[in-house]
Length: 119
Image (tube, rainbow, N blue to C red):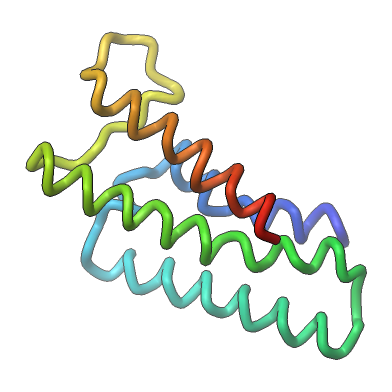
């Protein structure tokens, strides 16, 4: 069960790697992802209060909300500066603009690494 908490905690990272357009969308997928992150956050609080699972692993359920907030902040700045959506450079081996590479690196450090230190 602890492994499942870690996989769910990294769900925004999985979306960033494979479906970054879902994270960039301001329509229905934004609200679905936000509600999903808030439900996981609430579930982690419930499981920690009731001591139903390993407290160290349940804390990983708080990570998607933090990662999503970091992504949206980075996305807002990127969109204002470049007037376009960022492209994922993780799986692509073609040349991409340096702004997309910097965005990807910043998300990996701030959106994936930062929640590990906070949680």
